Image (cartoon, rainbow, N blue to C red; front, side, top):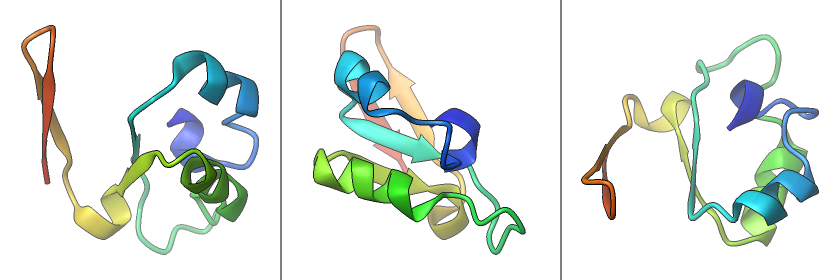
Length: 73
């Protein structure tokens, strides 16, 4: 996710062009900036994109062989 899920970091156009299956938001718990922004979370939810947040899950590890990927939480 661009800029920790900030309000201006993600656009509908970017979502439509990239068609992500998963969004990983690297963000600190209770950060003073309010990231990720609720509008960004709604955009992801509206598109049924699985959202993984490091403030809720801790480390998120993604492994790929170049064709497929797996996520370890």
